[in-house]
Length: 124
Image 1 (cartoon, rainbow, N blue to C red):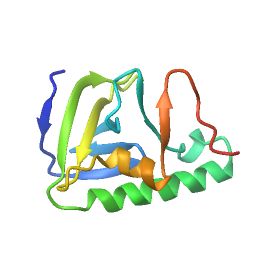
Image 2: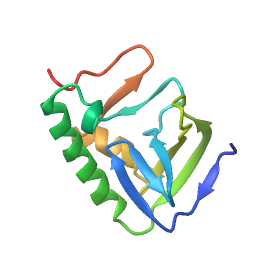
Image 3: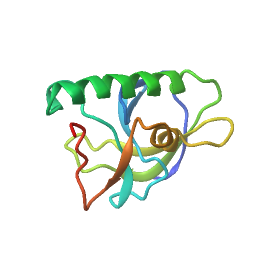
Image 4: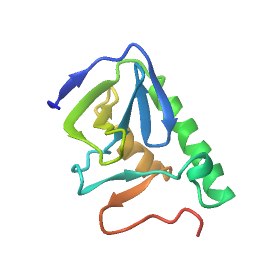
């Protein structure tokens, strides 16, 4: 996959850190480095460990949905795909003011920093 800008006719929130661009799931990086750092949000549905995590996931998804409704978003492919079976492209999405959406979710408390060295616990 080549890094670069992409256009989406349809951009929706799948969960707090995954978007769907014209049917293709993409994972938010939050300006992280592929396979080293990024953002993490609570798991949704059956992937959640506890009811609290499910509730937090729906809140994070709702905030991402609000941010995706803004006009003029710029989606930048990192050139890498995640290591899940679906190989989601890793992306950064920038608002018109230059702020990256994943970093905004971190700042607002809807996401936590992700790294290969730790697993986030959403139920503490």
